[in-house]
Amino acid sequence: MVRADEEGKNNLKTTETLADNLKYLVVGMLMGIVFVKSEIISWFRIQEMFRLQSFHMYGVIGTAVVVATIGTLLIKKFNIKTIYGEPVVFGIRPFDKGNIIGGLIFGFGWALTGACPGPMYALTGSGFYVFIVALLSAFLGTYVYGTFRDKLPH
Amino acid sequence: MRLPKLKIMLELLKQPWHWSIAGLLIGLTVPLLYVIGNKPFGISSSFRHMCAACLPSSASYFKYDWKNEKWNLFLIAGVVLGAAFAANVLGNTEPIKIADTTRAQLSQLNITDFKGLDPTDIFSFSGLLTLRGFIMIVVGGFLVGFGTRYAGGCTSGHSITGISNFQVSSIVATICFMIGGFIMTNLLLPFILKL
View 1 (cartoon, rainbow over the protein chains, first blue to last red):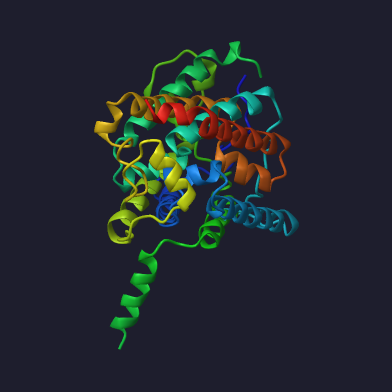
View 2: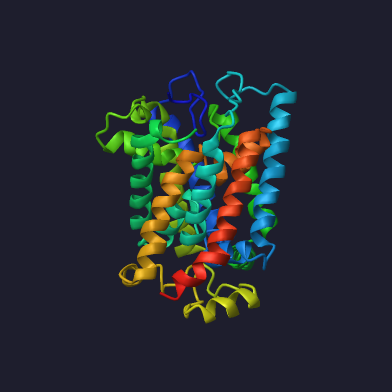
């Protein structure tokens, strides 16, 4: 069974054209710039974080969570619609054992590569081309997960 | 004179950005994506779309209309382009300033290159051919791909978007991301880096 409310799911009913999709390209570009300029894609910054030797990463993620929470609450409170006039959908992902087991496994990989998925793309763009190999390996990891999903505890 | 002002702006942009600026901009992405297209922010789902689009599979996990999710592929294409722009046009000319204790400890673990965002001892094609480089890039990448999808999201989907929506699953997942990272960094990585 595939959970319909997973992260990254498109909840828009209106069909978007290729030109409409360019706005996500622009948002992605801004994020890529922020990722590089704030050095959060750096393996050193991740090492500092997991060694509790710097506040930098905690500051970035903490601020992002606070800002995102305020933004989300404002959308809910004032019932703000999308630019297409549709109400915003907030799917809830129910808890399962995968959050724990998969979470730990991702944590191992995050500390090894020094990058979560967004930074893996950003590192490739910034000139660390060996991250193409890390990304291909990540696709393989997802492929293996998807193939054996039914046999894994959830 | 306008030109000197522009120059000062560019110099400011070239310096590393403060964590609060980065946190603010990344946080704003969440409501922005909701409003411009009813999209919950998340990046690791792109791994799934890549598999569904490019690889043959009979698994139900890859049987869905990935084309309806192509916005996510535009987003990651943007991340690659934006990062290339930032590194080449707005690149910081000074070496990265990391904590002295981190630098000292990593030096003892055979890291020698502290100039860029990542040490080229490991994260380069010659580093990939070493045992520790292979483990960190290939095995590490695999664990990111396997783990994020098993957990149902990554730092963006769970730790930022999920927590901002008060999801219990996202809080649990984030705690587990951190526990995994602490274990790997402090207990296992010291041995791997010495290989």
